[in-house]
Length: 201
Image (cartoon, rainbow, N blue to C red):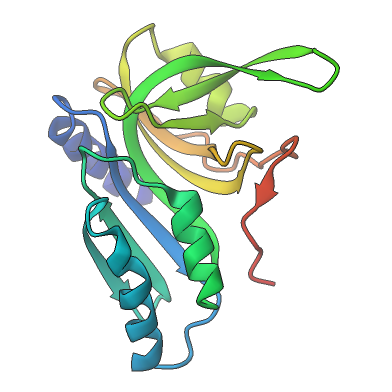
């Protein structure tokens, strides 16, 4: 049943984003949400400074989440948003996103000069990139996608790299009309030079 619902959801998302690559939404799970309307006011105030980047957002006290719907013409800086919420003592312990873009090469250069090629999801219209974490989900995606094809990814951001780029764990994805759903149990590996999203205990 879950896969059927997810398949239908991704099919609708793919249709909706066929003409525009973007972040559909980002859901931030907060680790401190026991203060009723005070928390809501703090979150509203914190996110109000991003009125150009965020078209709308919703706060769910029951699930302790904030769902952000970005302006497709701007870059949503999840690193800065997470930092501001942390400063307000409302630290996200998990970030989930649905985003559409193309897979591109991304090279990480280490201090010794070693170059290690990686892959990233790029939002073509804004240039924003998400580093694809190595693992089963990424391998399945690379097997399925062709150069220049747009792909809608459902994933989680466990960390940010040394350039504050989000590191993305692929949970599911859609390439054109194809559905691949076996990446849900993918476990994130350690990320070199990455700052982790805090755990909820």
